[in-house]
Amino acid sequence: QSVLTQPPSVSGAPGQRVTISCTGSSSNIGAGYDVHWYQQLPGTAPKLLIYGNSDRPSGVPDRFSGSKSGTSASLAITGLQAEDEADYYCQSYDSNLSVVFGGGTKLTVL
Amino acid sequence: EVQLVESGGVVVQPGGSLRLSCAASGFTFDDYTMHWVRQAPGKGLEWISLINWDGDSTSYADSVKGRFTISRDNSKNFLYLQMNSLTTDDTALYYCAKGRGAYSSAWYDYWGQGTLVTVSA
Image (tube, rainbow over all chains, first blue to last red; front, side, top):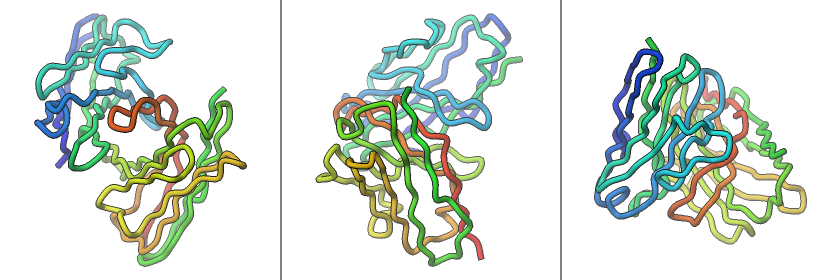
């Protein structure tokens, strides 16, 4: 059971918009700690997608965006492409536990 | 180019010990906090440990506290993870990751490719 809750799977057709939620509590996201997002393609290491709730590292397409409100955060992907099919993880800090990850969400492009 | 290359993963018996290494290059190693994150087969990411730039401050997940020790050699640009009293639950791909940002808002801008530790009789 992960401290940050993500849906196990989401799906969308090419060109569509999908969102992935990351729900925490008052000891992590709700306490004001930043949320970061990673993309893990099959058989590869995670790659930073969003940091500081909504900032994109250079090289990450602006189709990817992040937001945070209250005890939750979201990753939105617009203009869905086949290459976006991957696992996505949120990450934050918990005042009781230190660094915490969500359980991961598998994105399927239909 | 930033590179993190882990090594040391092998098959080990329950109760055994192992030391993982992570060779860092392409950045000023002693400017950054470094972390270990693991991923059990078919499972999600689990943070394991961190060490600050000079090694004076470390932190561990409850699942490994008292069994694992993180360390670094800034003269050689290496990060280490000493793993003792291993159990089957420690079977995972172990990643070293370069931390960015303040301690409580840290994120990982670079990851190694991982080294596989299998604990099995």
